[in-house]
Length: 323
Image (cartoon, rainbow, N blue to C red; front, side, top):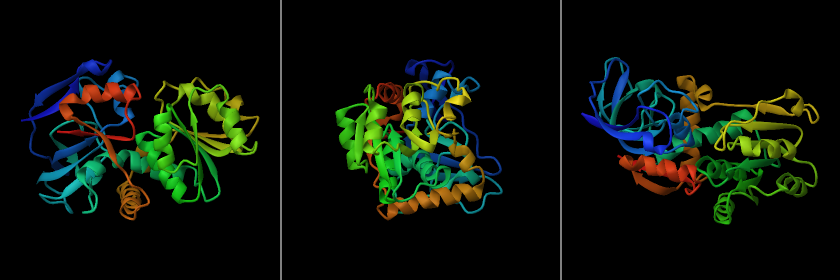
């Protein structure tokens, strides 16, 4: 017997229920993991609300860390007691104990705590592919980063700054502006300003940015386009304010812009790609390039409150749920 957060209908945070569940022994190719920490991500709210539909009833959560309790047949390379983390397999991290595909688990280095691991697997590997594989940014480039004080934003900003990239961060408050500056944003703008794109152009001497990373969606779509230089790239990797509008491809023509909607699950679709991404992330943390911090912590049973505060933009950086 274990406990988990489950939804029987989609909606607001109130649809989340803390329920007991039967758990069988792990099947072939699976490992049973006792979660010690669970990550909170905006995609969890998309699943809960029905924006990204799931078969109901459903569990929630993509990301977690824990300890191997038992191993199914055919599994090699993992044993009872190993510390592991995950972010790319089946949904259901909001639980005490779960069975998980062994080929989607990675072992944790001793220098990375369970709490940090549970909040960097999805966000950190997202930062890895955004900077190193989606747009291939380089020293001297200028980028625009929406939600720069969020869990993914602080990692992207810090990593980009270490690479010699100039980061123009966009945040929702002065409090978050200071967080963005502390994590590598050389320029910080407040969202909602009427002249936001004009400010970006002023910072870049009228040129615009090479890449714009937008996880906000509907509210920032036009600003993002206006902020890009000719042949710039619009990277849409989230929609916290709602889906972007239906796109008339002609909007990209005047400046010959590129648009992409990348996904972590494609960038880690094979075991080799998963290991490469996780290894690059762990190296960045252990070398001090990234200094992730857990800024909010909730009991897993209180995940509904965590969702409410995340959607209200009351959280800053990474949040962990503790079983």
